[in-house]
Amino acid sequence: MKKDSIIQMWEDYQKINPNASKVYDAWAFGDSKEMADELAKLVLEGTKTATASNYKLYELEKEELPYAGLLNIILDGEGNAVAIAETTSVEIVPFDEVTAEHAYLEGEGDGTLSYWRDVHEPFFKKEFETINQDFDYKMPVVCERFKLVYKK
Image 1: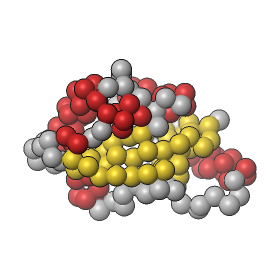
Image 2 (image 1 turned 90 degrees about the horizontal axis):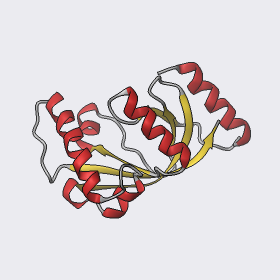
Image 3 (image 1 turned 45 degrees about the vertical axis):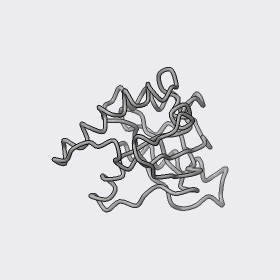
Image 4 (image 1 turned 90 degrees about the vertical axis):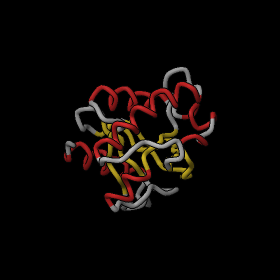
């Protein structure tokens, strides 16, 4: 994570949004440089307006869940800040109940629920392996929707 680019983007955003919340989170999508770059690009294009994450990891790491109004600085694979997105809604649902609409809003692949499941199941399985737990189709998934509010 390149702190200078995060701080610079936040300062630039606050210049045009002086009443913006003082709270933000900075993160990259996925588990690789390539995935972070690809998904950040989809956000910049306006194609990706949702994401899904493993609820269990928030629980284990005692991290606060995202919430409506949270500002997120999206990072590329090098840790550079590329955009700011505002969380518009958060819903926790079992993996096998993630909707086709949510899958479409994630903007990946062909936009279908089938594609979403095909790429997220191995991703979540890999995350569970790191914490010595098993993937389950009823695992809680944090389904977050957001809107792009700033890009350079």
